[in-house]
Length: 437
Figure 1 (tube, helix red, strand yellow):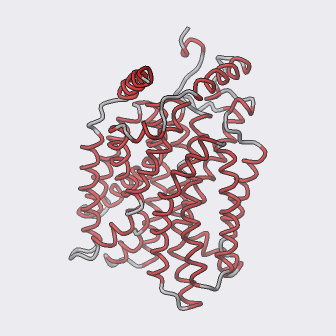
Figure 2 (cartoon, helix red, strand yellow; figure 1 turned 60 degrees about the horizontal axis):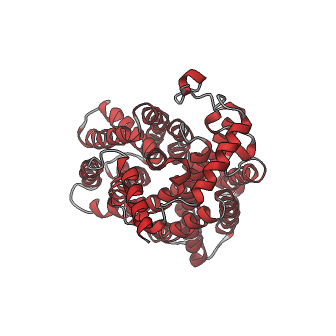
Figure 3 (cartoon, helix red, strand yellow; figure 1 turned 60 degrees about the vertical axis):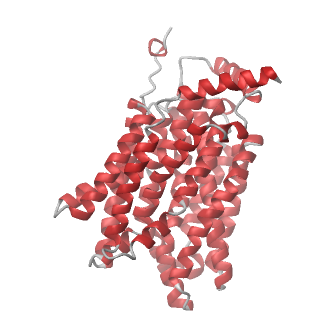
């Protein structure tokens, strides 16, 4: 009997009570680290006014933190694979909260810079490297819908965080200006301690809220699959030796570069074009709100058309959005902002969804643990990419043209991987290699 006949609909947002609670946790896990990535734009102004620290120097610490993320991502992913993604998340969140207390209280430039680097690395590993593993376990077939929903917090964070930190600074002062983020991270920690499990069966929840099977059937299927997972042919070495892995990772890294570049310096870009800071901030907030809608929309497209086609569409609308931002007059600017927002909102969804589609629930973490760090290597260069191109005549318009070119190249490269059939082909090759040993 088919899943449809049994009553299961992979395009339904019927996640169940426990499923919606899990989605709330996952949304917080994406929201908080993204907030900090954009909050430094305001924090550096306060530090410069209070201590005379150079804002440009401090902002470069985020780029260093991004590179540290890449270095540590392989280790964190390996620990999550060997131990438990939930336990690794708990450790990361505790460290994250401690660092936020320290950076707020710090009056030392070296200590502040060190904290910013570590906050970037710890937050990105929690948000992008560990959290999606648990999501793929809980929602293996509805991962597109769920990722589209929970990553709505990413663009929303980018748009709201300057207002959050400004209000906290005004009310609580310098030492506690990060208190809103500490509280939200603490809520996520409580979820991890008392509700979230590595596998939904441990929480008496059927994957995807699939009620076409009993809890006992789901737990037995999970037990059998976990036994098979122990003998998975997808070792880290074999993942790295698969050429399609590199094509996917490098091409999708372009989307992360796009998302990070276009949002991290949007206020500066609009100010460079003559806009007042308040107007530039409002345009960034508008883009962030569009991205909230775009995140859900692209998640639905992902679930309906499949991640490959959704990813290809995102390259096109991202390039079109930048073109409108540069050359479109009047109200068409907002069309460009909507397309940019949809791209930013969708970019965070796709790597997890594609890996889950191609490798399945139990091999997902093996492939994702390699692909996502490579994506982050490319994305880590976003601030430098935008800033360096902005030095040419034309300023940030040149940066946006650079993003258009990168998105077109990304589409061409990504499209060379036709589908996920290479996974089965490689598994057959692995079996042949093992038989010869």
